Image (cartoon, rainbow over all chains, first blue to last red; front, side, top):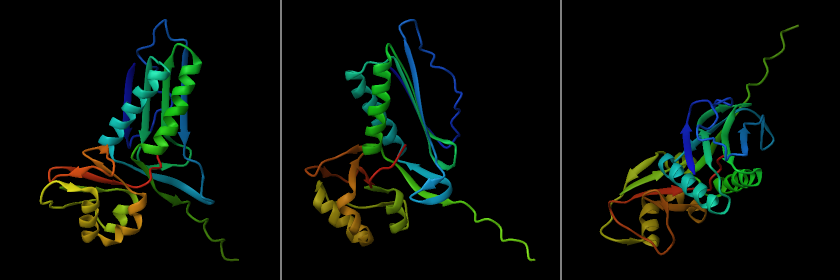
Length: 139
Length: 79
């Protein structure tokens, strides 16, 4: 299984290229994109800031993907996690999986996200509040 | 030993990393004692923090040497 992992402050291109390793054995190409929502713990926010312990996060993600692939064989997985300040509506993470069948692809995405949220050293550092609206003009 | 701090631990300590000298192989409890002697403000987080040695999580039976890089990993929240 080919694994591509990227942790970067660059915006995630939601129309990124399809995996190069697709072949005639691939019957399922699935993707999941996690977006920053406008509410965080009841607050209206403008952005979230993320931080990673990057070498460990990349190594652990690869190990988790290889472990899951032992039970749910896939052909290709690409994980892209953005760090730094991410505005509302933009992607914090994207996973693209190619497999023979949808069951393996969906299982890979679901199990990986669960493990990511348990073990991979990436943190939401803080929520950045949306600027308050300007005061009304004097009457 | 290089010690790395992340997320709110970095804010409480006021820095992202620091150097700590160990006299020799040091068990985890002793490492924590030395860490908290330098940064006692991190004590409330000890129970929720996992230690990583050279980029790998370790268990309570582990010991550490001066050339290790140790990261204090608070509960993660990626994705």
